[in-house]
Length: 413
Image (cartoon, rainbow, N blue to C red; front, side):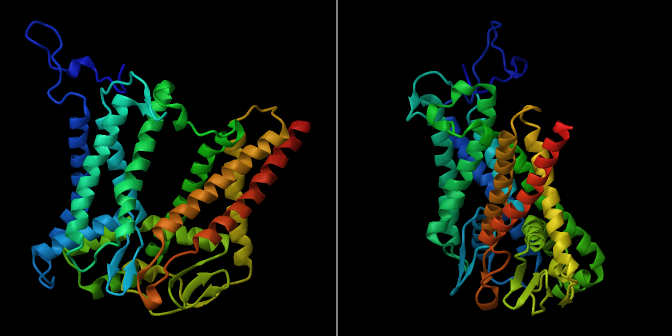
């Protein structure tokens, strides 16, 4: 029995009509090579655009070695590491780029588990020993590439903070492994050991899926709002783009970098709707009260921010109602996972679990995607993660409970 069996039609056949074993057969060596290849492909996704833009811009300082070290630093930053820049720190992770690296890692670890035996005893109650060896070898290969990237980046102008390298080297691969194993567990639950199953009550577990969908709804709505704002303020955005003088590959990389940070900006919108608001630089913030102006970084998308001024008092009410409506939507999906005639208490617990999941995901994404872009006025950029999570949960809960009560009233009619 193996994790994944490929169709026999794609396997080469021996001359006698029997099956010929694949050249790259299952085993920890193959998995280790796939891990290294996964890490290398992940690095090239960032390194290649940086090198192309560097070589295409005559104003770029240094040689190819400098470009390589900067590219390695940016790759680690995308994976979650924090960079040093003199006495300043850069810790703002572009979430869309991080998602791409996570997806690539999931593909890699899934390939590393192909045709690996799932027979035998569990290792530490987690996975069968052959599968655990393959997964461990894949992670080791991936971590070696991260280590090489760290060594290269440490020689450049933006050396990574050593402790933060654990994020791209350990946390990102583990998350990708968890997603891959979730799919394996759906196909064959016996592959997962007893310690791989979270001891959550069924009512709480039912709220996880709707909660994740709710987080996607909020972030997606925020991203849409950012896109609309850019379109409406396009003359200002284009003017900043022209002032930067980026052309050709440089302009393409600049546009790609802004797209990679689009979910981060979407979270800023979510924070505005929930109430905490967000700040771009110290002294420049956007809240329900209005927009406080300040000297902004030369980033074209930031030109789409509202002009300084006060907002009408009704803005806060509308924002709360929008988040509460999202809570009702999440509760509707959560309640649909239980029996129609289930007890009211069960429906409330499932809805609350879903809202808590949404708030937790939003807070974690904001904690990862927010941070510092430098020192002094750029030392804290984005929204306060803890306050955002708590306010989103409270406002979602209002809409969720309203939906559950309405659902119970309809059943009694």
